[in-house]
Length: 388
Length: 144
Image (cartoon, rainbow over all chains, first blue to last red; front, side, top):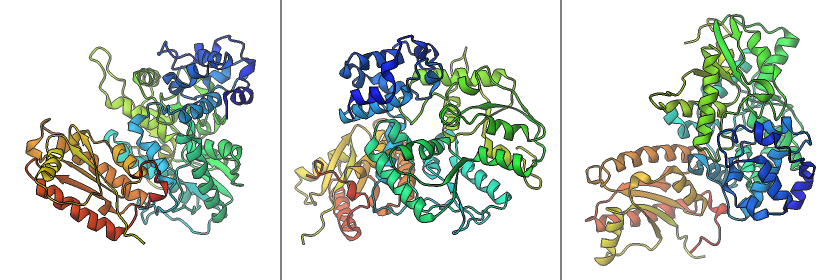
């Protein structure tokens, strides 16, 4: 795909040069050298090299905040994604966080000969079924375990919590032993080729499994399945739901009740769940239906909530860290004792920022952080109403 | 059909293992030519991604080798290397790679013969295992 097509496809021709994107961009607030408007202008003026050989192209969080304000409805995140794929063709890969391990893992997974051992964490206490209509998407969680052991983050806790919730509601989901990375990270770093291979494999696996519904505990996978797979021609023909939407539906239709959990919490909207897919109410509904939970909103919440600072594990720099610290401060300022998020990646990035002590005059704000699914497991079943 | 010749990538520290490989060469100790050595300043700077990349580019096995614990020029390099190796072993386990394809060694400068023996044994081991499960990803330009 050349630059001309990308400009056509993402409404970039309609850019008014008003600069609202740059003024609202969470990265431009900290990094004066990053400007969405400049990237667009370079493309419109035909300075392709200025665009693709610019390291700042990889600074964009693709968080969709800019598009909320854009009067011309320019799809800037997709523009960036496609421009990154031209950059990849020119040998520009951006600077990947964790030295590119996550992207390497995705590429390694494209090999047809591998036999993954991805369900070894599954213990006897969970009930899964081979011929269930419901599939629980595990995603990258088993791989995150060794990668993030230094920051004491266990992504599988979130998957296990989702499984516990489903079991509690009488659903024995199916788990795929040979699912591969959904391809979100490689797609947003511009590696379309790897993405297509992964998508093809996953779509085939799901067709073979014959399920009617897929439940995600990770909004990135959810977004990729819902929007990107059909876009690239890999339709899975299933109902797709995030665990928060699933729970909200149960509360509304079946009158699901929770035990009491006394906590003051605040909620971080993950960009993939919120702005990408418009799911703002479901997680809040779940939080509000737990007795004893007091939800206080941060200064920026809902559509203008601030991103956790890195997406697709690319370009995690000092500006991302400043962003994270400010976001954590906002969370602390609400007076909440617990920060709830619905995305494992948000939790990774916030926990990573909190490992750093900060400066003496400006210590990193500290707040306990938990996934929505983990909070819900504390509110279900017998004796489940205690948070440690 | 010609016998399968495994490709091995060795991450060797500048001060010990690289010098040991050099010593093996100058002492004319014979060892199989399947090994491609990547010299690093310290085994402690080996990154999990280096190992992942080696497999992605078509290695059948990877050796990470550096100084013994007390010999490190940078004091705690081998300890860092051990932590990294444990991490990457776990990742490779989930990916479904046989653990025999990864090897953590400590070879000091004077141990040229040890280096030759390690490589020889590793090549024999890999010949039994056959090509790596990631070999379909192997890029032609890397195959030497």
